[in-house]
Length: 320
Length: 248
Ligand SMILES: Cc1cc2nc3c(=O)[nH]c(=O)nc-3n(C[C@H](O)[C@H](O)[C@H](O)COP(=O)(O)OP(=O)(O)OC[C@H]3O[C@@H](n4cnc5c(N)ncnc54)[C@H](O)[C@@H]3O)c2cc1C
Ligand SMILES: Nc1ncnc2c1ncn2[C@@H]1O[C@H](COP(=O)(O)O)[C@@H](O)[C@H]1O
Image (cartoon, rainbow over all chains, first blue to last red; front, side, top):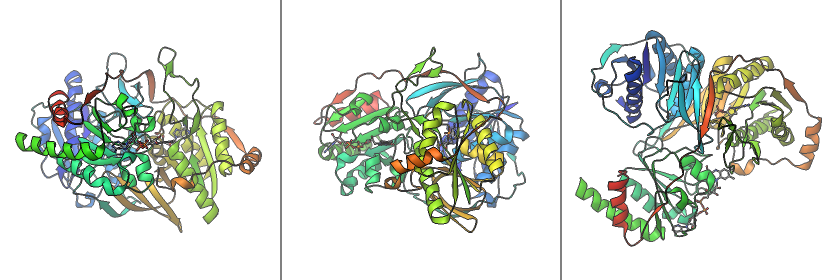
């Protein structure tokens, strides 16, 4: 039996989440002695997966798969799972992985748990801890089927090196037709996306207007971070809807979340609570965000943020 | 065009989440239930198809009797018929099987569900339904037009957007963006009166057993106090983030 992972890539290069799911799968394998197999699609160099405990790579090379298509990609994962007789499939929680996982679940009749944050517990059935109620709580979910699918929340498990050699195997299953046609992709390639970012810098209504976002972007730039915003900020059109984070917006599970001029309403916090370290900058020391944050600065964003940018630049220069 | 909108009956976003029965069940005490926010966007888009393109709009919820006020609300907003599958929703696969059965028997062209629910928020049901009924599937859908049996949709991807086309039947996982927030509807008196005369069908469940079951719930450990850093001493913040939190 084996544990299969979907090692995602972008522009033919593996993404960090690929190493994260590999780390997770190889940690399970330490207990179960399963073989860890990765599926890659149009990846140039898959060697790096060996660093994270992957034994075998099913390497798909097909020009028709350069653009993500949910039918094609779920088909490949299903066929790969059958090929290596996988009993566990691990995926990330990227938009694409979340899109295809339910289809694979039906194909394999495999119980699927998404938003998983820890390794499975194996003593009492197969149970995984997952986020529920948009990060307001956790649930232990028992997957009762022989085949299991785990959607691993990003940054939840981290990277764990385990040196192996990943054997590369060409894998070119026949791909069925899809009725879904991608007409155009509009992607901001020079910016980190909220889903991929280790650090997210987020602005709220306290910033007064869209013209003041320059400093948020500069702060994000210095930190290699993605920019985000609270719901009213996107509702008023100060920032695009895709930046809205929270319970009804995008979930954030970054290592560091910096909230500037955000009050910390329950719906906002619910969506960002999975972030590891939270910093708040707010003039009002009574703002609820101070109860949720690890570090706080009571102060005016227009004074604090420019200082923070300067000091961070110095810090980066000294630590380069 | 026949549209089916999937409605999850979920705790209001301001709800405090607690558990009972030895942390094995969600404590509904004092919790107000609402139409899932993502479903509300989908329902409103469905109403647009009804009003502009003559579509019919049915809604379905998988849940026990306590979910009825929530689906009555969708009738008051303008849905034509409501179906409640009378069973306790336990996991996404089971819920999807129930919805797939309704969708197949009803011959719907379009099934609108939400990207995720806000209770057990698996983000699983819509894709499962699509696969079970052999329909096309578009997730994280922020725009949907249908002309001559062809759908044009915009999907949110990490870091951007993608425009897709697909034939019907189609299932979408919808979210904010499908309609403007200001266009969301609150039932008015006339709608509420009319809803009383609309059919609310209660259907027996067909699904086998669930594949995943919650055994126990817990809440995040209470947070320690925030460490306050003086606004004049930003160096300290950087030091803490670097040395203590190891976040930069
Ligand atoms: C159904 C529903 C769903 C929702 N979903 C979401 C969601 O997903 N995400 C979300 O974010 N919200 C959501 N909300 C809205 C939420 O309840 C809050 O209204 C919102 O988060 C507030 O945004 P804010 O903090 O930017 O603005 P405000 O609450 O107006 O806070 C602004 C803050 O900025 C501070 N401030 C002012 N001036 C300065 C300055 N110069 N420097 C520093 N600080 C300053 C103020 O002290 C204040 O704390 C939802 C609401 C509902 C009803
Ligand atoms: N019990 C239910 N009854 C009807 N629709 C549901 C139910 N649960 C989930 N859905 C639909 O599926 C979407 C995604 O839910 P989930 O997969 O639970 O995150 C929701 O937004 C609803 O549209």
